[in-house]
Amino acid sequence: MVGTKTHFTSEKAPCGRTVDGEHYVDRDEEGLVIRDEFFACGCRLIRHEYHDGSVDVRTVRHDGKRVSEPGPDHGA
Image (cartoon, rainbow, N blue to C red):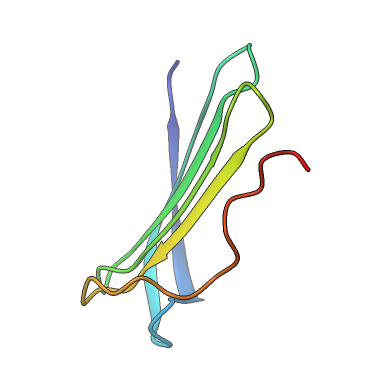
């Protein structure tokens, strides 16, 4: 697996700030997909799709607090 990083500008971070950052995407041929967004302020959006179809989504602000969101989708 070899991931790709793409720079972005002026996107809204989970904390509400508009900042630059990077999108990171990595995948394998079996169905695993990793999508992460790293914002210049330190916030992160994390989405991992696993081989069994389950999905884990996490949003973390730059101060380390997780943003409320629905639980993981396990293919239901």
